[in-house]
Length: 247
Ligand code: PGA
Image 1 (cartoon, rainbow, N blue to C red):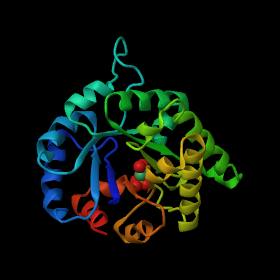
Image 2: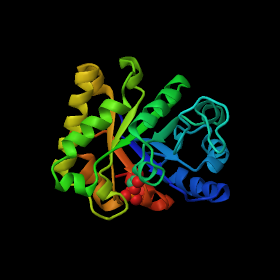
Image 3: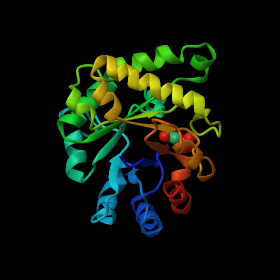
Image 4: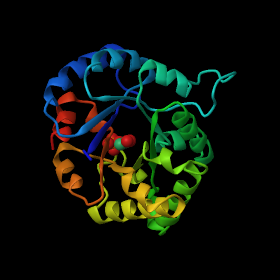
């Protein structure tokens, strides 16, 4: 399977800025041997759809409601994202967990909404600095996998991506070591194998995110069992992101 490189714009770029970016990016990654997904703000989805039509690039959102429809002012449903042209959606990003108090239970409901609408969830998990320093990383990852994936069917899992994003590595310039990433991937696959099957634990894509730059992308992509990268800050420049895609 091809490696997957995901851009997460976070709360950056208007619709017009997204257009300028994509027009610059597309020729730069024309010959890439990787799958690419671009997760834009809600207001850039329509522009993303226009610019990415007839390209293999997957359009993505960064959040979704845990509810199907109804009196939830300000929320956006999975069905709306599907109709708008999204293929993938980030869920459980640490910034949402921290700033908006999202829980693993809510994230589980969001994943179910996405799967019911044939959208691929990109589930973000990972430990804080304190949790790592106090040897709780394994426990934290196990709990996140257990709760976020609870009640899913094995055949739904192969449409998912799991992003291991240690929180202390996000936007800090501190990158996890190859050993730390490798240990986390093994743990994630082992837990999935325990709850579902060994087959799907091998099929599901597991990617890493946290302070990725063109300079470290190639080295990270050589980690055994790692299927790709989730890029925040370094995805905001088309040229920089293309260097990561072409690494
Ligand atoms: P970063 O962000 O690449 O800026 O560290 C990654 C992320 O938040 O997904």
